[in-house]
Image 1: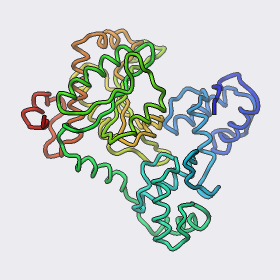
Image 2: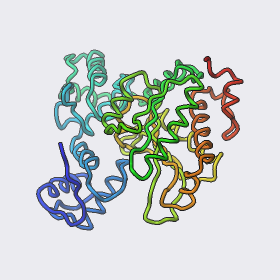
Image 3: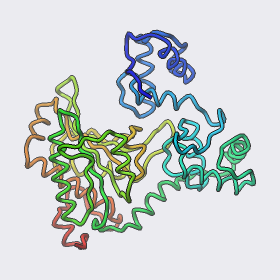
Image 4: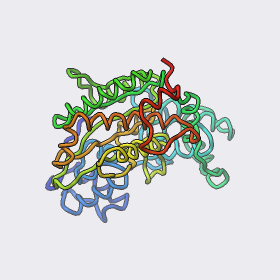
Length: 368
């Protein structure tokens, strides 16, 4: 559905509906039809908790997150509906619980897809309830009964690591999607860096897909569909940042994760840390650290996905760095090395900032 952003000063029925949810979640003491300063502060607190961009504005992304938050496990019957997947916090809780018990419900993304349905069926078989893939009262009761008897673990992370190990350390035949920003202020910079990285990776035997070209600019949903359409190993989204204070500067990376739901992409988090360390070790960009976020590109892609903000264009120093072709080459080498380190075993890994592209060739980590 289309949605018009709501912000300070707005009022009406939609504001009342959304503040009712904020009130039920404990961010407001009471619902209101007026979007005032108290509502703005509540929205910011909700966004912070959910791993969204903290703006105080109810955009489409925040609206959907509020809609998801309406549902707790047991509030409704949830099932697989291919044309319009059910989504919400209840689905997230179900996926998390199934994963803790060893049933593969796929990525914990809050969408009831075919993998989640399959996991529900396997769970139903194991506890002796009707096997229909529908999470109704009987299945929920069985889940609740097992809450205290089955110890949680991290099978999703183990599966991610097993896939990485199975694919081997060589970059040859890996499939990597590079997503350069299409925002007018940094489209040229990010596309240039993406093409430079594409060239480096192709030389190492990687199959590279760019989400856009100089003439084609797909939507976020199309980018996600592209990343999910093949046997993608990794997705890297390239951006810059801006801030009203020109003193803000530095590089930051983001991976899928939610402290509120207690979920994260293990491989995404690992790659974000490697990328952050390599860039800050090889450049003088300020280390703004790694952060868990629930942005759609991070949450809805099947492969580990990382977004990197390569500096602030609003900062004269960062802007000057990013305009320098030599600096861009350093960024590209940092990213290529971080990618390789992701696939090396701990025993084969090297100290941050020490590997070079030539080292990968000498080590036989390309087969073409």
